[in-house]
Amino acid sequence: MCDVCGCDHNHDSKSPHPPFGKGGQGGIPGERKIIDVNQSLLKSNEITALSNKKHFDEKGVLAVNLISSPGSGKTTLLEKTIDALKNNLSIGVLEGDIETELDAERIRKKGIPAVQITTGGACHLESSLIHKGFHELEHRLNGRKLDILFIENVGNLVCPSFFNLGEHIRVVLVSVPEGPDKPLKYPKAFKTSQIFIIAKSDLVRHFDFDIETVKKDALSLNPSLKIFVLSAKTGEGLSEWFEFLKVQKTITHE
Image: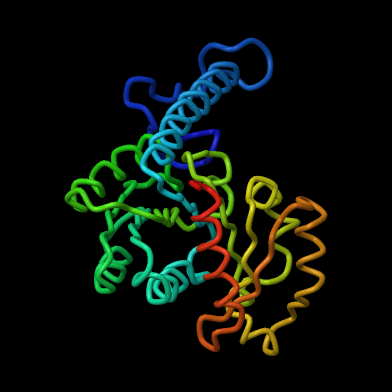
């Protein structure tokens, strides 16, 4: 089990996580080894993330990493975003899931190239997976220029916040039915993001969810967060989100 993220996946087959019970001095047996491996893992991930970002910059691609709990509406938001922007911008998607290609198939039905990254148990994407996935996406593009790369991370508010993928923008998304406590319960997700999206806003009248309080809690953790309140059903806030992406594409690689 990975002590960094709690998943049961060996992130690097060359450096498997050590078992408890041997080694280490003081504390939990094996604790020192686990800490050393985790630090090595995160350092290796960061090196590849920097390489990814350099590659995105060289290609003029705006990379957007979407993180949230399962069922919060990431894929639906992507579908709406694709519908609004695909006639003016070239879009590609890397879909992260533990199993299945269901979300990638939804994106492909929109006429957008999508590469499914199945982690087989790991609860997050890592920069090495993005490196491989992006090259596969480039192959499918057959030389066509890409403007925006959306990375839909594995549904989880904990683990993805630890792993830089080389993205330009990290978006943390919380839907109204999940409850208002997510910023305070999962602070790292908000501290490491640039954008906070409150989704399914049309349902707020059915839940104990005070939007202004949730905004305040999020901003107390990260005062620079830009916040969008959206509803894919009614269209609330979507035009502002679409415009933001167009502007970011322009200023990121002007």
